Amino acid sequence: MDTIRIAAYAKLNLTLDVLRRRADGYHELSSVMQSVDLHDVVSVSTQARGIDLVSDADLPQDSDNVAWRAAERFFQITGISGGASITLEKGIPTAAGLAGGSADAAAVLTALNILYEVELTLEEMQIIGSSLGADVPFCLAGGTQLAEGIGDRLTRLPELPRWWVVLAKPDDKVATKDVYEGLDSGIFGSEYTQAFVDHLYADQLDQALQSMGNAMESYTLAKIPECRLWKERLAETGAASVLMSGSGPTVFAVYTEEDEAQAAWEQYSTQGNLWMCRLTHSGMGVLDRHVGGS
Image 1 (spheres, rainbow, N blue to C red):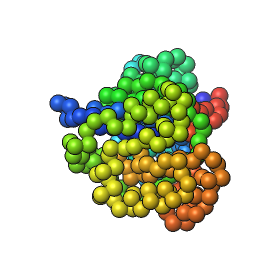
Image 2 (cartoon, one colour):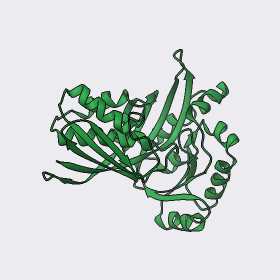
Image 3 (cartoon, rainbow, N blue to C red):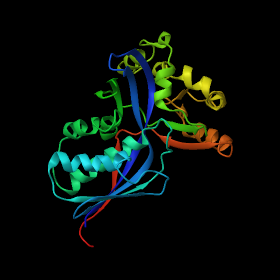
């Protein structure tokens, strides 16, 4: 039995514009996505047949879990006769707008590609990943990327500095489907993303930070007052920018100095669900690999 352990990194939306509603019901997006080193640990082992999954969180342990489906799709696409035993150690909060499930699926695909020595390219894995969820292709590559379409068309952008981030997650949940259905068409358009990308290519990082924005905030902040509270709290800590990620409810603050991020985390760590992390330039990292044994 061969085993590999991978740190699967969370995703933030540094910008998020909703361009329009498509005829198929999906929404066209334009977003700058960014990996941060807040992570799950995904352990995958080879076995003779079948897929087993366990987690330290209250998650489905069958085909209702996207990590399980990632293994299933891998074996279907490659035609390999084999199995996988998957363990998820959750560090990314669930239902948080941070792509934790997509990160796990991406890590499973990467792990199986290594363990079974298939040598699928990143692009080939992203094609598989796109059938599992819109964020999976991003999580396979990570870093700083422009995401278009439904979030599946990716363009790598210049790397940002490894700034520090404090995340706050309200206890209330919001369903992504409800957010999309509740959006007013008045917010449709490209207000944030293009400006951020232009500043990034011009190496105008201060201006890029100021151009961050999320069109979905208008809905979620109205539904979950705690989101607005965290935006107000973190904005008072000297953060360079404060924003909600994805459809929420997680709010995050970006700091260019570590001591400011540390002070903000210490100030509020006893008042809610808070994490401190950094931007990172990849979607995951291999922690270790064990070959052979029973």
